[in-house]
Length: 132
Image (tube, rainbow, N blue to C red; front, side, top):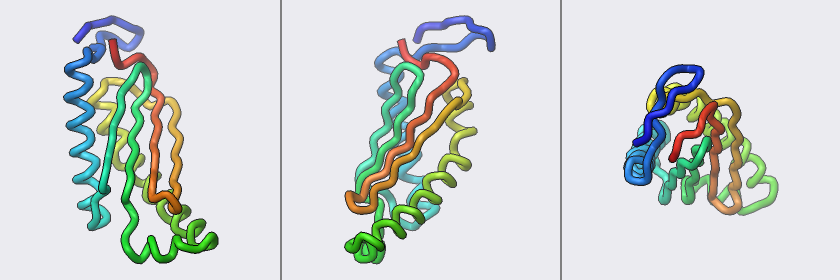
């Protein structure tokens, strides 16, 4: 880890080893969060921390009834809309934790939910570079 001093004080940049460890820790955290909140975990979760970004993506998060509903175009819209609410609630619940963990503030975030592909994505832009 490399220590830098900025406007907000001393912050540490993640080296490659620490970045990979933290990505794995956050992957497990996210899987547990969704299992606890929704009763079903995500089949595949990946967390990437790079420069000033953190990207969380998941594949295989829909329940069997949601998959059935999403088999039509109108159903895809309904399921995507409902899951977008879940994604935004995840952000409200977890952004304070991410900010404390990374000692950085989220400036911007974006979401993508694609019920047809059973895929979701959450991108956060932080107020400082997180990696070396």
